[in-house]
Amino acid sequence: MLVNPELLCALDGQVDKPRRSSEAPDELFSHPMLTADSVERLGMAGKYGGPTLGVATALYDTVTAKTFHDGCVAAISGSTGIAGGYATGTLASGLVTGLGNPELVPVVAMGGDMLGGWTFGYVGGIIGNIVCPG
Image (cartoon, helix red, strand yellow):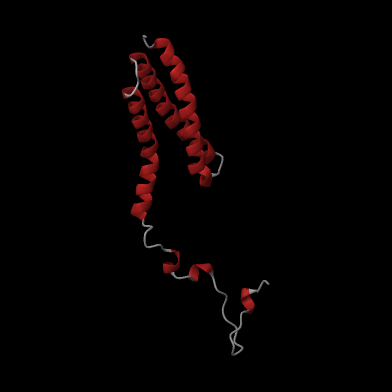
């Protein structure tokens, strides 16, 4: 049932003035754990967490390789995957922002980063198999 805010009446019959959403108390929209600093730190974790995980994975694959050739391929594949993921994530988020949908940037940036990392990592594996001695 919809009620016209102009017609809200108190029990004594007097008409209240219309209530606006801006009249809500600030405490209603605040969260004790969500501060400007925590939001900024979350953004930094998203910005640097993906490439850091990529570097760690590439180093692990390089160090645990059984042969020099496999280590060389892992290093090249990891490097191109990190660079490609970072570039495609940035380009995808810029494209979505340019199209006027900034609310989709986190999801599209993550998808672009994953797709770019996998694609460029695969291409880096092919390049590594060609250029690495072994």
